[in-house]
Image 1 (cartoon, rainbow, N blue to C red):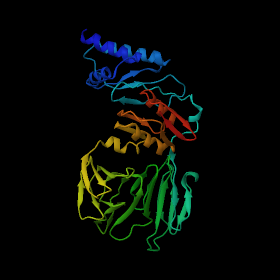
Image 2 (spheres, rainbow, N blue to C red; image 1 turned 30 degrees about the horizontal axis):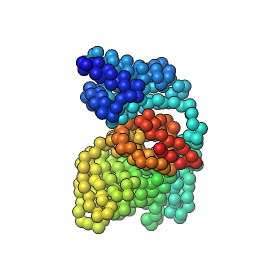
Image 3 (cartoon, rainbow, N blue to C red; image 1 turned 120 degrees about the vertical axis):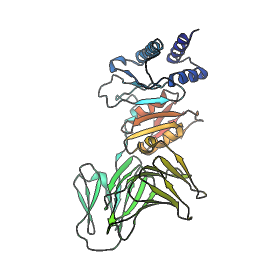
Image 4 (cartoon, helix red, strand yellow; image 1 turned 180 degrees about the vertical axis):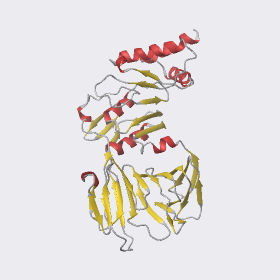
Length: 383
């Protein structure tokens, strides 16, 4: 059998569901080595799943007959369902993954599982709590001589009513599962908080240092340059046993992992250190410092920044991610519990999905790879 007919037969087996794991690997390797360009299927092609599969198979046949046409190991498919909200491109490491995007809900149990959003609780210096997603845009809250306001984008901003008082007082923002929030600090620095995060900061930075605390969770920082008599005032972030010194830069800190704290530099420069040690490690853009919680050591490695900042930009981004890793992110964002009924196959996933996607749609991506599931009382049961 010549090369063209061989890969055509593999495509046919893949569409028909009879392809073996070894053949999947061969076909995927061949398909992934073809240069960049998406295969785009118009919505009218996708009147049914079977028709879509047939169209994809025909696309593969056409490309086999035109070896110089540029393609990519990605299939972008748009299902012809009303109110199309988004198109999702997904890559599955060991086969081609077809994604069917539907806004009609086939499983009523998913109807109550909606994506997370801008939700957080503000704890004032006197302990009073303000549910931020329940107050209107433009609403003002006062904490001493500081006015806290929700702007037109739903973000929190601070301004001083007067300069009276020098006492250092703090606010804390807590985001729940299914929540995220952005706050502009008194010095103009911006902080984005992911789900299940707690961040503490002073209402007014005083002295020669700006210090804040990320108790837990994940936060993205865009630190403003701040001067006092033409001298730059450093910015420091404390997390557990770690401290990060900054002058003016953008970086991400992730403390979700029980074994490591991961600090990734996007722009500028930072120095990562350990409270219990004099050792410190300067980072360059694209590097990540990983603090071992058990022994306090820090290691550095290069990372894909697209995956690091995706949550801030409104996406899930998976690169060689295991199923438990993906479902852990889903559990935080959709505020659900995950239960495994049996052992999980060691699939490796790659892909990018909008965080605005409903849970049912996100799970359909995994279902096409053989993952079965049901949901009961906000518990996702995986088979």
